[in-house]
Length: 256
Image (cartoon, rainbow, N blue to C red; front, side):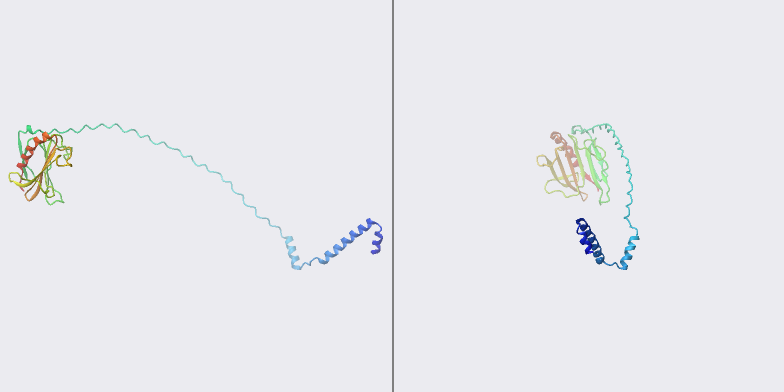
């Protein structure tokens, strides 16, 4: 071979070709010498992998198409129109009672009241009935005698006291008489009592609808009583009504 190379060396082209052929041969020899040996198990595994079909990744399922649901559009029902309130017919004003002037009193009436009281009062005056009430919470009959020189509004005697009027109340005050006062006797049997006069000169609590109040506390039939005169203004007419009040008080008698 060397002799051939010597002959080829004479020609540069032939020498280069010979070198390339020699390099390829040497490379094949070295590769065969250093290639690792494959064991039987590795060969079987390689054969099996060659025959096993390649498994591809599962194709994801297609997402279903969601058809939007059209919700019904709410309809706004208009609120009903409230008709205007019918015009209320104004109530007629409550007539103001006219008091009976003292100067017109010509006759007196004797009254024997169911409460046990007997007294005289001017003819034409009004007395609110009933004057006696039986209450389960009270051991004795409850007495309320209301009389006036005007006509009471029914029921209950509401409406206040008109100008120039006199209203007299007789009842059990349920409290002991206050201290002080002026000694006074009531009725023909001379029941012992105490008199109190309240007007705008000695009281700031007296309402303007009253000119004065005269209160007489007394005891009769082992019970405490109060006779009270309520005088409406003006003062001149209240002065005229005072004698009528004292005449009624002077006639009071309790027979129970």
